[in-house]
Length: 231
Image (tube, rainbow, N blue to C red; front, side, top):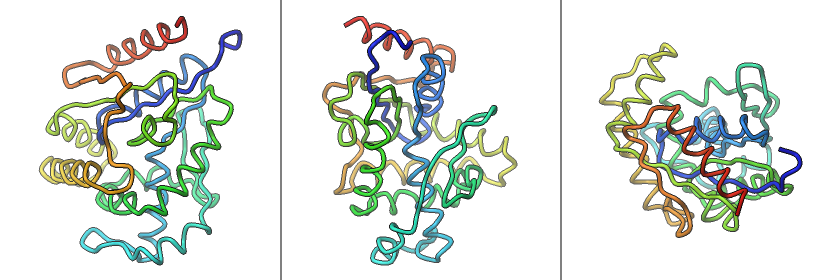
């Protein structure tokens, strides 16, 4: 792909809408760097949880979370089996995917100072283009001029089932009802927060993948990329 002009690809959407799986596969196929912005918010959330600044049934201590930000270093490492999230030198990939972190991440992500800090990191990662980044506000805030924007959606029930199956495969002791409640709560917080609310960019192409297989989603995204490159 080196002979072609590199572009910025933003993949946004609801939690458990399949955006990360799609974005990661596209990046691998076309030789771009993949960044999971959601993992960055999860890493901050994990750090806040460890410091006792947020819990499932308690609002975050916003001032102390803000004080925590300068002490955090977030990076990614590529492995033969995928990508790991590194928090202050520690591989926290498994821990940040827990339902406990999922239950606390939206309130942390709604803090303006957290979003500002991570948006700065994300923009620096995409300075040279050739990047596929997924999240909630990539096409609207982080890279509003991205040449390719996609917004993923699916029913809350379908997304909850996917997440439930994923957690169950990892040995988590959770119920479908718990996961569905978490998905709906996160949707509400993401859509109604004051800072960078979740919304589909006006120039994004919306994809409802409720009834699509992973292969169909990946092919759809790759075809869209190929059409964008030819423009």
